[in-house]
Amino acid sequence: MKNKPEIIVMLTQNDITIQNARDYFLSACDLDINNWGFKNTGIGNEEMFLLVKTIKEKGKTAILEIVNYDESVCLDIVKTAAECGIDQIMGTVYSSAIHDFLDKRNIPYKPFIGKVSGNPSILEGGTQEIINDAKKLLDRGVCGFDLLAYRRSEKPEELARAFIKEINNQKAKTSISGGISSFKQIDFLMDIGSWAFTIGSALFENKFAPAAPAVCDAPVASYTSVASAATDVSHTNFRENLSAVFEYYLSINT
Image (cartoon, rainbow, N blue to C red; front, side, top):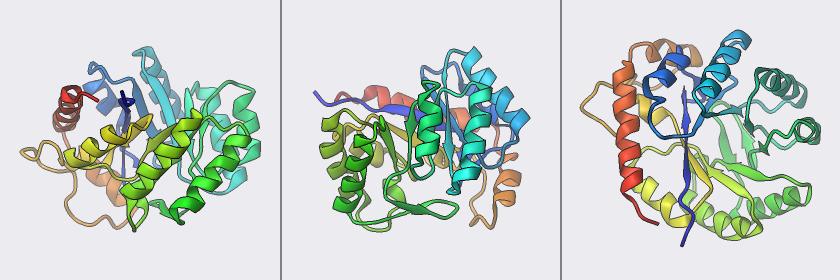
């Protein structure tokens, strides 16, 4: 029997934490979904502390996904997150300094794998090249990966299937990320049996409960415009989309 992936709800849109993320979390935290995440962008230290505190008070796991690639900047972000009580760190390119810092505090670290750059993040590299890079990091003691399969322009699902087949056999926990926005994609992720998958923007764009108005149907020009648009979606609509995903998820037998 294949592993049934866990859902990681990202309180984000286009790689930025949604405004009033804590309120959106509270609107749907009664759903039996354990993992709740956000990005380092679009959120201040005080907001991060309160969001992490609230997630943990509700008995959930708080995950920070870092979308920055400068080691010194990322290390500062990680230190702040650790002070806030974060449960897991995902994202950014691998850094031995970050790995060592988190390892000493028993905080799981699942970095991006492959050539990742930009905001929003994009993934480059051949399938075997990415797999080989992962094997090298496994030798360094990395416990898992944040694979931005759907941010690679060519054959994202071919990459995801090959990666999970080879890397999961080595007991690494891999989350498939990068834009899950359809039930068909969820079917695929169930089939390959990754550890988890992230879902964020689609919940604010009504990809799963289209009767509700979307946050922003126009192309996003900047992080600021995303944050401003995000204040217009109701917590009810977010919950409706997440509920639709969760109900579908529960209906699938792996």
